[in-house]
Length: 134
Image 1 (cartoon, one colour):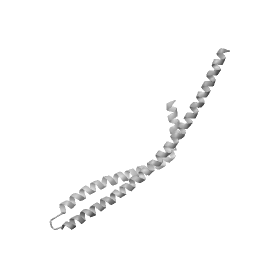
Image 2: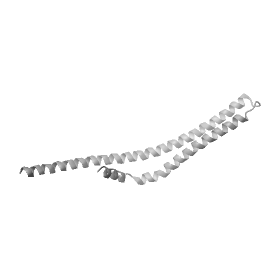
Image 3: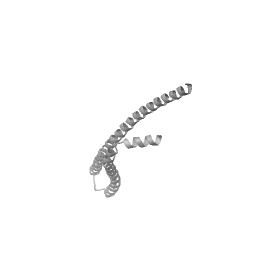
Image 4: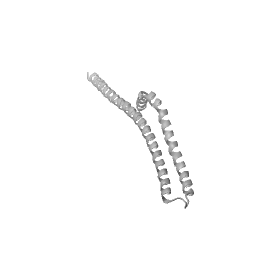
């Protein structure tokens, strides 16, 4: 009974929408993952190269300007990652909302069917008792 219910609920999910949105979700997740991974590797390499290239010839203000530029680049990349994350979360939230709506719909149907079967069972039990008494 439970397996049938699960299969029925799973068959009523709008899989065409889920499948339609799945490539974009996967693409956004992959892009986000690659950007995070590449940014972390690039930043560690850039920082080591910049720190090793510092010399006593550069003034304090030049060093601070260089650090400020790197921080601005990092802030820009973090903003891009945040936007990619927001887009991915929006798509996942839409899919989740659709799935929850379908589950709620099937839950209501299951409750109605259970009440109907309980009523039919009560009527049949009453009929059996009536036939035995008679």
